[in-house]
Length: 311
Ligand code: PEP
Ligand code: MN
Picture 1 (cartoon, rainbow, N blue to C red):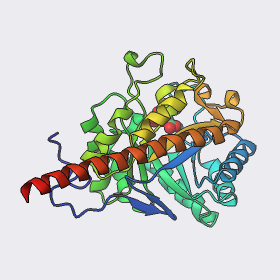
Picture 2: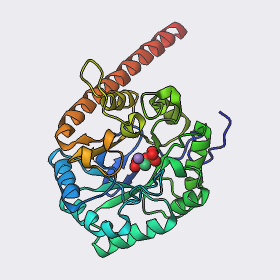
Picture 3: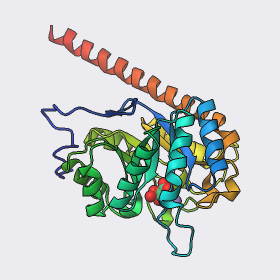
Picture 4: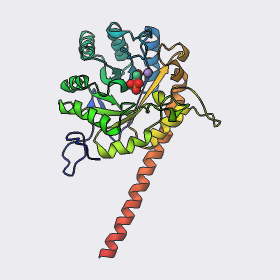
């Protein structure tokens, strides 16, 4: 890999730090946070039920889409800025500290900032750059120029990993290094019947090439609620695959009545599935931590053997 990641890359003399903290939540290559919630904000009742459920399960983060980039101009485009004040107020009511929310133009960042201001900053926002905008360079520079909100940069679904990493570097080059890199599957028929080809094998690759925490989005990768004969949903399986490889963030579509979701209804889990999902994720996380401990033990004993031979 010969690409020039001056800021985000890992270098020989490494004085840049890994990770960041935002609104009381720490993000790094060793942490794990789940962001479950609405793909697209629809009603106040559904938003409140979602936040209430998240808090009940000890969650401080959520996803909420207000601006939706859709394939068809005739599809629901998201509620836009009108919903922001009440979404943020409800988030504050349920102690949600960080909401991942996609922006598709610079003006959306100002709208989010204004809505936070008039509501007394009850919550925080992570600006999500969607896969369709990974190479919208002016947008990347704009979210990089503001240093308040962290960024979730989703990998482009039809470009190389290097190109997507360079997109993250665009944000960083404007001064904002609070960036999480998101894997969400690649667009190709080779992933059929999944919506996209799951690319979570790149979690450790992005960890070693960059200092960014890595997010995986099992909902957009898989795109539907199919289950294997073991009874486990594909969405759960791939989430676990990301977490067991060390992922630091999960972005999951969840809805009080999944079939009524206005966007991507086929891939949403229900509120009643959240505790099951979180327990399953915890199993995968524990397995990852055990793998880490095993590797440390094996590496240490190899080093000890070498030292004994040299002595
Ligand atoms: C989303 O997370 O709502 C979304 C549109 O994702 P992506 O950009 O990965 O398609
Ligand atoms: Mn979508």
